[in-house]
Length: 218
Image 1 (tube, rainbow, N blue to C red):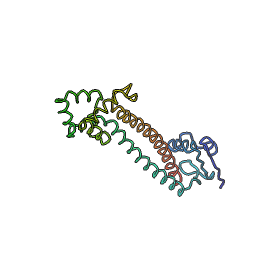
Image 2: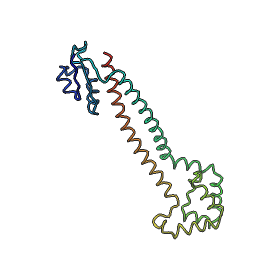
Image 3: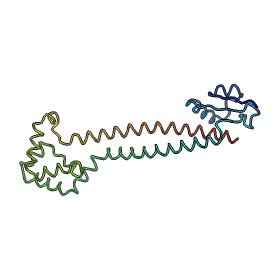
Image 4: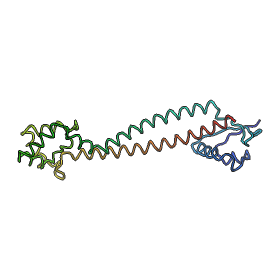
């Protein structure tokens, strides 16, 4: 029987006489398959009971391999998406979680007492906008501890914030912490969007391959 290769649904319909309403789901899958550069080869001999010619290529074996590879890729991308979702949640709740955790830190209560009893300490803490809400963050805890417990360090840090060009426009020690959280949210959203796009493309491919596999089994 004659065989012919096709790379578009229009040519397939024209050559095989497929009806316009013949298995719309399969036709949509074929449009997506052809749109991504796929080709098929069919036997132009007798059609099956549903009016479709026999599918010669891709073979059942080839389609099983394609489906297996795409499902594996989808699983990997889904894991990456979950990881970025966690990073996004962590960034979104960073300020809330650090604010709550500060009250369980002994350093917070040392700071609280200093603020109440020592006017000089209170003035320095206000000048530097000491980020006590970050006391539970390992990246900020050493600096905060030194500020609370070491007078010389506190005075040096206060002078730096007051006079350094680095703090000229924003006299806030922890401004980079909020900037970092914003950056992480932006990066997480960006990666989630990219992964969603890839997952959508994979799902479209999987749908195409599965519809072709149904055809190959007729």
